[in-house]
Length: 65
Image (tube, rainbow, N blue to C red; front, side, top):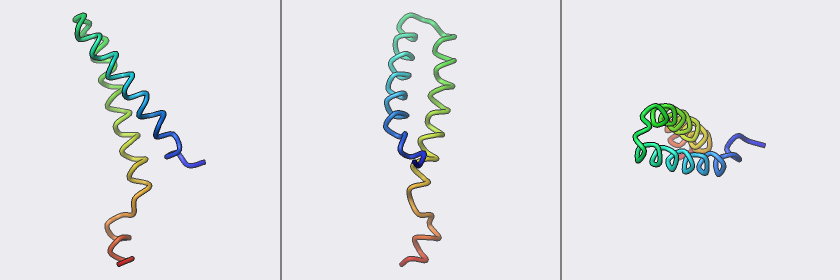
């Protein structure tokens, strides 16, 4: 099973983290916002890397054409 199989779960977790951040901001819980912003950043990196793995690089695409 490829790591990209988990993309839907990562997207779902991202939505949950966005909800947590929004609720924490509404309650002025800055530390909770900061902690979850870091999680959101990490999820963005994971999702970006997994999505990039599924696409050919520019060199591969030009070699194929």
